[in-house]
Each structure stands twice: as C-alpha cells, then as structure tokens.
Length: 490
Image 1 (tube, rainbow, N blue to C red):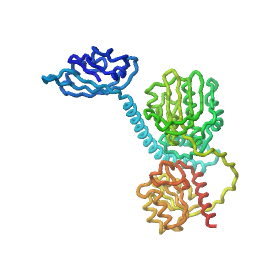
Image 2 (image 1 turned 180 degrees about the vertical axis):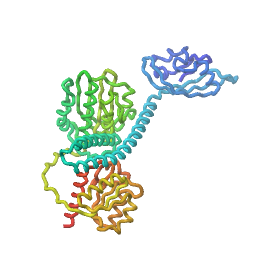
Image 3 (image 1 turned 135 degrees about the vertical axis):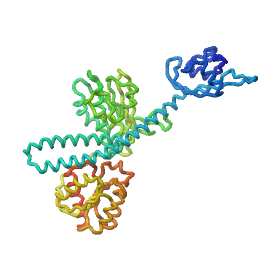
Image 4 (image 1 turned 90 degrees about the vertical axis):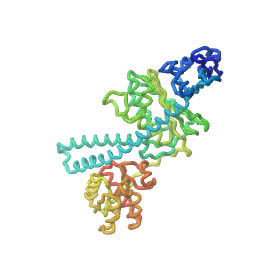
C-alpha cells in the first residue's frame, strides 16, 4: 500500500511495498514520484486527473524491480475525499499478479494446443480416407501389370509417396493424442540401451552421445513404440540444433512429485515418475520459439529441412500416455527436454517368444460392407470381390438395416465404418447382430481406436482396421475373421 499527495509524491509506503519492489525499507520510497513505480503512457498529470474523475481505477502492467527482475502488477488507485470535498491524496495498492498471469498464459496455451489437436485429428481422418483410395488404387494397378512394365516404376514411386503421407497423418494423430496406443510396463533403461546405437547413427560423427542411466529407475507404463519415437525425434531435433557438432546427453532417474506441489508450472501428476532428460549444447531458442515449439508444422529450419511434426508428435505421445514435458532453453545455451513418464504398477515382463503358425485357409463368404465414403467403399468392394466374396455394399447404417432382410446370401461378416451420418458403426453392429446372432464384425475408420471412443466406445477386443489400409491388409483381416468364426462353429 502507498499514499501519494496531490502532486503524486509518495507520503506513505508500507513494508510490504518495499519488499515487493526490492528496496531495503519503506523510507527509501518516501518522497519519490508514484510514477517511478507506475509507468503510464499518458503521463502523471493525466493519470491523476483520471483517478480523481473516476474515483477508482485499476490497471495491470509489466514492472521491473530494483534488481532488474520483471513481474506483473495489478494497481488499484483510489482518490481520497478530504473533509472539504476536495479530492487530493491518492491511495494506491500494488499486487503482484505474476502467478495469475502465468496461469492464464498456460491456460490459453493449453486451449490453443487442444484446438490445434482437434483440427489435426480431423484433417488426418479425412486424409486417411483419401490415402486409402490412393494407395489401394496404386496397389490394384500394380497387380494388373507385369513386373517389367515401364509404368510400374512410376506406380512404385507413387506408392512410396503415399506411405510417407500415411506417416505424416500418424504424426498428426499422435499430436492430437488420438493415435492408437498399447501402453504396458516397460524397463526404460533397457529400452534406451536398445535404441542407443540407432541414436548414434542419427547424430553422426561430430556429435558425441553421453548416456547417464540412474540406478533403480522405476518401470514406466507407456507405449513402447512411442517411447522410441520420442527419443529418436528429440535426438534429431538436437542434432539439427548442433550444426558445428556438440554433445547430446540422455539421462534417466526416478522422481516423486509431492501432492502439494506448486501448480504454477506445467508439472506431472503427483506420484512416482521416471524422468527422461535429453540435453544438447546447440543454438538454444528464444521464449517466442518455445511458445510455439510443439505446434504442428512450426519449424525454424530451412524450407525442405523438416516437416515441423517431430516435436508435435513428442508432445502428443507424452500427453496421451499420461506424462508431462518441460523445456528449458536460452539462445546460445542449448536446450533441455524433461519428460516425466508415469510409473508402472507392475514389473515389466519379458516379451513373449514368437512362434510360427500355418497360414489360415482361404474361404469365400457373403459380406455386408457399410462405408459412407463412396471411393473407399468402391475400393474395398473391388478387393473383396476379387477374392471371390459376395459383397453387399451400402453407404450408411439405415440403408444397411433396411436392406438386410432381403440380402441373399445372408451376410456372414459385417465390415463397417465407425463414424457415419445417422447410425454409427457400433449401433449398426448391435442391430445387425440382433438379426444375425454371432456375425463377426470388422470396424474401420480414418480415426484410430482411441479417437473414436466417443462414437461407439470400441473395446480393446474389438476387431479394428485403421485407414489407410492396403488391399493385402484388408484381405488378411477378412480371412482371419472368417476362419476364426468357422473354427468357433466346428
């Protein structure tokens, strides 16, 4: 608190005010102009007049303490009426609102990232439909050509480009936290040891890798493929930041976040975590760059040197698996990424040994195919008919239910998109099963299993095929389902 006279000079300042500004005592402030502390664009005289005219005024401004540190101020100024009715002294309260401004910025950032995530997920869904048709058409075209045909090379190049495009959509889905994941108990140190050689090859000869594995690092609950992608993407990002060479340090440790930890920063949930720290001594980054660091397609690299999706994928994967990520960096002083990975409740088990099993026998069947994207439906129908199946193709759930009683031969398998106008795939499957009990169902979608939870709540045991899928993938999945159904009846 402070009081200023009619000219704006401080006549009173309490001890809290001197502590706020970093002065040794309140006496230091007396006699100074109020506007040494309150920087106004309109000047002292106009500001005082505005206070006296409105009686009370509130503003929020950035400020600088005596030691040069910057903080945010909320200032309330009130003109005090004298006994004669004149408005002379001004009572001013200063409140440090840095914490609130920081939380507001975090909230705005989280909302922006969530909005970008929804957009990215929607784009990936639509693009996956297109890629199913593009990749499928290329695959069918190649099957019709002799291996030596000159046009095969062009189709193979197009197929490779389609696979690259599919990788981009997976990264978009990872950012939007909607990619399909299978988290399980993992030994983080063992996993890092497996990918260490790969990281060395990515870094090149002029960058040294140092690994510091803490003792008794807690097992984590995470999708193993995404952990590897996180490490590799951070390694590539660090490599590109160390143009003239340098050192990349990867360290692991166990941390416990107390329940009463401050919420002023983006921190992991309370409890035990494995901390994965990836540090480089590259060019570092400004606060502005750090603000946009995890946004899809944001990059500081030259055109053609990166997609801007690597760190977006890291952010999405960490968030989706229940972890947290922090970044510390300054220009010219490198960067440190701290990834908090949730601890597993069970001890990791050794991966099961793979055994060879004979390929299932092929058989043809009557299939009900429901797909609202006509191009995807036409491709899938073509593939299934080439395999000898009878295909009843409908474009939506209502039409499929209406046609079901008259379909001959009766469907032995239902293949349905999940997210459709009208009936969604899960409801359609339930109603078809009421007419044809025990019919196997294959759900397909341009979204992934996690993303379509709100459109039917598919369980982990549900047969699901994500777009884009190839003719071979569709054929293998249909064959497996038909043979599984036949085995159940025998």
